[in-house]
Length: 259
Image 1 (cartoon, rainbow, N blue to C red):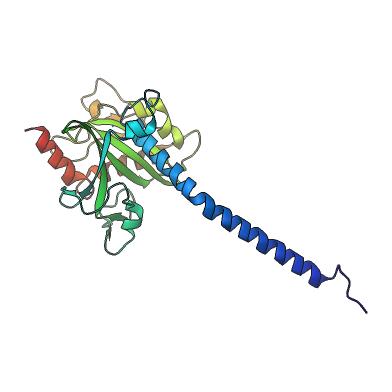
Image 2: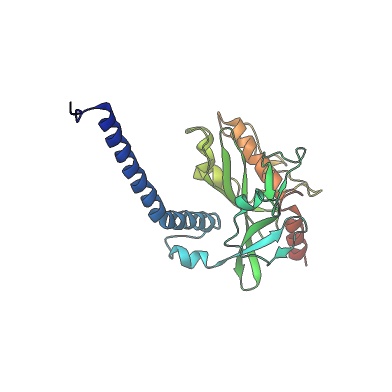
């Protein structure tokens, strides 16, 4: 007796064949689209750096503006520039997880829950001739729900904030995502990172800053309903400008600015 074309075996063969064809098509599409995806991610990263530098994207194209910014690598232990690798091609996340280029952050220093970091860090310098006009640092650390990734722009004195901009996070919509609001980000401009002894001092407080207070120059308004996100921002800034982050490099830049 002939088998029915609608048998379970035939149905499984058709289903498996369709699944294999779809898998091949999806995999092929992913491979073909990967270069464009990487290009888009790189352009987005450059756009955020240009934005935190205060450049007007309406005034020129992205590549022209980004071309005014010089990427360098810094040895985070010594604060010296490191020219042994291409700063643009350096992947800090990948390096952090390697035995050769990464290290574990001691728990007593890991206030931002970074866990591991690369031994080198990128810096982006906005220059006028040989003079540094801005220093832009990549920063990241734990928020309430996610790791927050951004860039911190500083004056050449290495102590005064020009801006802070996040480009990736998954904080609570309507609450923690207030870190993206222009009004909140604008408060960072002109704030002082360090106290008189050189320790990180800037903080995201509960409530609003009293402009008449002598500590106002260190303070940022809190995020209503998102205290842990605001604290996470404070901690990640403290870590990356501190002694286990870019602190030695910023010390060097402060000394050069005072000459």
